[in-house]
Length: 95
Image 1 (tube, rainbow, N blue to C red):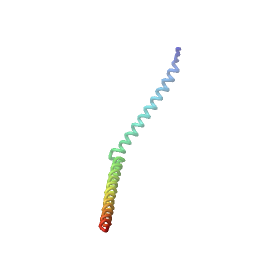
Image 2 (image 1 turned 60 degrees about the vertical axis):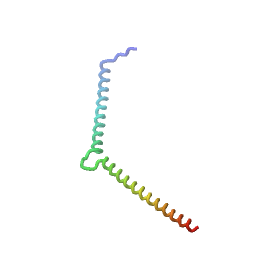
Image 3 (image 1 turned 30 degrees about the horizontal axis):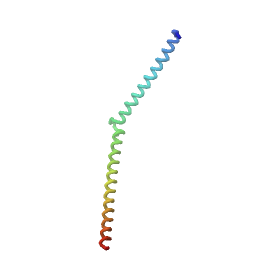
């Protein structure tokens, strides 16, 4: 099957294709701009704390709180075990 394209149809397809390519180019430029803005917001000091710095700060605070909770829990567990052991020794001595 042999199809032929007229000059007018060729020009129309060319115009459509070029319009499509321009749209894609503007979309790519917008994505690049958004990516640069996000990188600036995340990693550069622009007069306020960056998102990454805030996340690091929160992570450090959470680690300290978890360490305090674990240490306190361990101390309380040792205290309970020690008191239980003292009570058990007292009961055994009375027998």
